[in-house]
Amino acid sequence: MAPIIDQFGVESKGKVRVGKLNVEASPMLASKFSILSVPFIFIFDNGQMRESGPGGLQKHDLMMKMAPYI
Image (cartoon, rainbow, N blue to C red; front, top):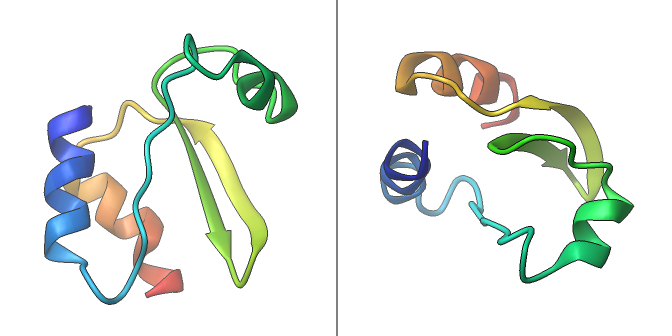
């Protein structure tokens, strides 16, 4: 999943911000967002979480999921 997220971030530069979290290094933040499995994806729009769910998506599926927010 990481290469897909990285590629999406590069291709969407200027339209979206892409970030990754190491849940082992940041267990408090992982707990705050109830991350139970990895990979996991959150979509924020104007500072509000709009969608979340398992992040094991193919590039096309990720792009379709993000389309309403770009």
